[in-house]
Image (cartoon, rainbow, N blue to C red):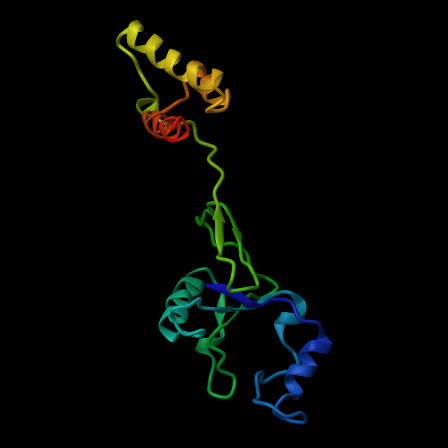
Length: 184
C-alpha cells in the first residue's frame, strides 16, 4: 500500500472539484472543502498485483482505522463515498493504550514500499547472547573473528560486539556465512 494523496492546496482542491463539472474528465471529488487542505486527510492505494483501489484491502484498513478513531470515506453515504480516503478530526488523539511501535514512512509513489522503522531500545535477551562454558572455546571464537578483522574481511565492530558480550548466536552464525562468502 502507499499514500496516493496527502496535502492539497485549496487551488488544487478547486481544480479537482471542477473536473467533470466545468472541465473535461471524470468527477473525482464531491467537495471543495476537503480535509486534505488542512493536512488531516490522506488517500491510500494498493500496490500491484492487486487493483489500485482493491476494496477488500481498503476495507481491512478501514476496520483498523475505525478502532483508532480515524474516519474512512468508504463508510460515507452514496454521493460522498470515497473508499481510499481517510481523515481525522482536529480533536483526534491517539487512543489510550495504543502504543505506536516505530516510525512509518508512507511514500507517495507505488514504486517505493511503505516502511516501518522500529528502533530496538530493549536490551537483547540475556539467554540469546553467546555464553561459553569453556575459555578455550571462547578464545577460539575470538581468534576466528580477530583473524577475519585482520584480513579486512569484516569490520572491527564485530570483534567489539563479541568483546562486549552483546553478540548473539544468530549474529555469529550470520557472521560465519559472511566470512565464508568474502574469503572465497
